[in-house]
Amino acid sequence: MGKRIKVEVQDRRIKNSLVIDASSYAEARKQIEEFLVYVFRDEDYEKSYSPEFKPEYMPSWLVEYNLDNLSQKDKVYLLLRKNHPSEWVKSTDLQEEYENIFGEEIKLSSISTYLARFYEHGAVERRGSRAQREYKLIEAEEGSI
Image (tube, rainbow, N blue to C red; front, side, top):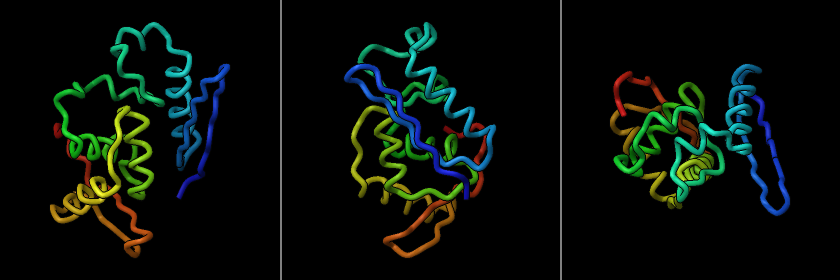
């Protein structure tokens, strides 16, 4: 398990925060840099995102996808594949991350249902009791999603 890092940037009344679990310096640095790019909204941000979509944290891989064509289930899988390819993650952490990145609410029960389906289909491993359950992607398949 990596180190948990929290970064907050406050500009007047607007506060942006990022919580990451990083297993290496390089991984932590990359995620923090992506967060800062979003916070300072360079010209690439304005070209890549429509004004109505303002995620709290914008990962660089997000620009590769047309979000209008992805279901909630697809987006949850995408978070696992892109942000947690080889690490254990809790459904509550995925819920918070989903809402921050995609700018829309998702019920914890929906996240749990999707994770259970991924487990049934052999896409993720799971461990722990129901209250402390964690999931880990088994294999990120290139070309999917």
